[in-house]
Length: 111
Image (cartoon, rainbow, N blue to C red):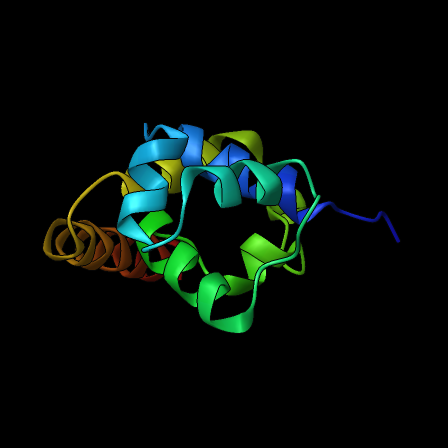
């Protein structure tokens, strides 16, 4: 199994969220130096910090820990997921409802 460094994943999701280390540090109530240490794998985050990071970066704790990598998803689905994560929760739910309805129609059409 491929081993993931949590720091690289934190950095990846921070960049996707268009946050600087300073902005992320402020949002998770930690110092900029600490965020830098996390991203370089000098320090490991506590469970509390992982939860804060996941909430701010709009990803699951599994994704931050590298447990659930999106390897099973095609690049296009991964791109759609990334786009969805940039939207407010209400917009995400509306789009997911539309997607589910469209899939149901497609399934019924095939039958």
